[in-house]
View (cartoon, helix red, strand yellow):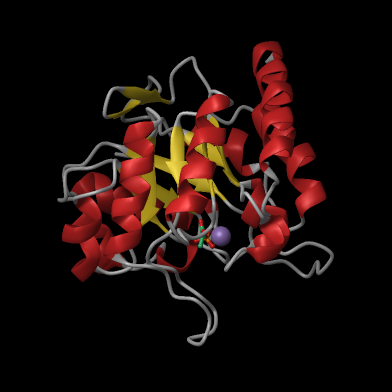
Length: 263
Ligand code: PEP
Ligand code: MN
């Protein structure tokens, strides 16, 4: 069902009244992790002021080390949703396990499936039945074909609302955190009708490289972007080195819109 041959027209995913995959670029921004009320309130106010539509923030975090900050859990979800509602933003947040689906579903407008779970087929089946749109990140070692097959798991459960997210893949290159595979955007557009967004933050992992790659993502046809921002990146509990200062994000959004209008 993910194939263009099944569905020649682009799919537009309805996120609680917001169209993803339509004429308008959709930008999801906010911190890597929800850390507290003040941090999220500042983030939501700044994100909304730029015209971005969706607030991001993880409350259940897939950290490489079990000793790193694991997220605030339900309290974080509540803080995220309250700030989103207060500023007219939808919210997207990661669900890591089937057991978390109920609680995350009470607060999220979109379930994020992280790169590390792209081939967690049991989780994909369950979110396919959970009644909310799904943001499916590309696995860090996944081919485009494998990624689309994972989307297929969600669609096959009767949930047509899948948004793909290119977030960089593992290559031999070490100058960047991952290698952002922007060629995936036109390839996916040809193979599939599903909307696709680009996450340059995890894609390159270095603050001053996020802007150029965000603009490139829009230029190559992405339906939107996911960008990590933080009111105080040096103090962030996760992904500080790749998080944009809020004023830099605001400036970038002006340029994103200019590129979006040109393509
Ligand atoms: C995130 O969005 O903070 C995240 C953990 O992303 P990924 O699954 O792409 O690593
Ligand atoms: Mn992150």
